[in-house]
Length: 296
Image 1 (cartoon, rainbow, N blue to C red):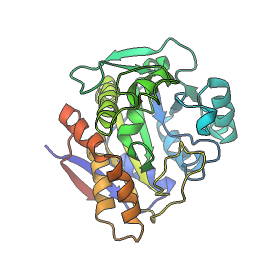
Image 2: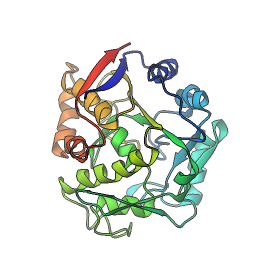
Image 3: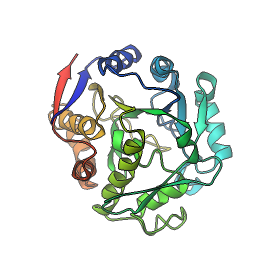
Image 4: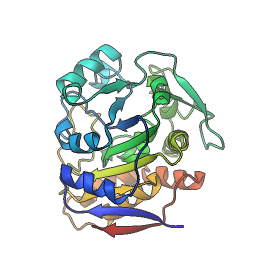
């Protein structure tokens, strides 16, 4: 059965809320709101001001996890103290309740049943404090994964520092200092992301929703300290309860674009085998690539 993906060309905080309401759901209990809070120096991430109406709508808590890279890669979010400081600098703590879910261990270890690369997924233990999740993704390119959207937010985004290492190495190691030497192939890495994403989607089982914002369309991720400026004009906002369908719809909008910068963006996706993440997730059965796009 095809999934429904709602779409608007108006990129504004108000449209995020309006599109969420189109889903006709109410996320119960304590709501985790997964965002990308932006690396220090990054100019493309979506700010607290952009997301505030949506987070307020669900009375949510902003959730993040520590990264698996450090100062050598230009990042400061790999340990809790510096991560908290950056969350303050970027305005997240002033606007919302914030939870760095793996600030204190031990990690929660979830089994990956029928995974292509992983047998287990390591996530920040505080994820189990929440009854539902709203995934707010800034859809853009990515230096390693080709693109970042809902599936990346579920996988790399919700994984602890050790879990991120496990995904990047396709299960070879949970050591963040070793994982870059054991970084997985262009097939294994996207499959590991799909494996990890499945566990989070299934954990919230019907109490999870996704919004992708196609704004500031750089080939680089918000995790880059020095990101390339956007190469394409903004496209719009999408909402769905299916993480595979929403990422596929975004990718199809990119492929159909006549923007002069689209070739550069597509090259980044293809050269990193990014679409394989979507294909692998669909093959695992927790979402579908078939969708109906409903423009609002």
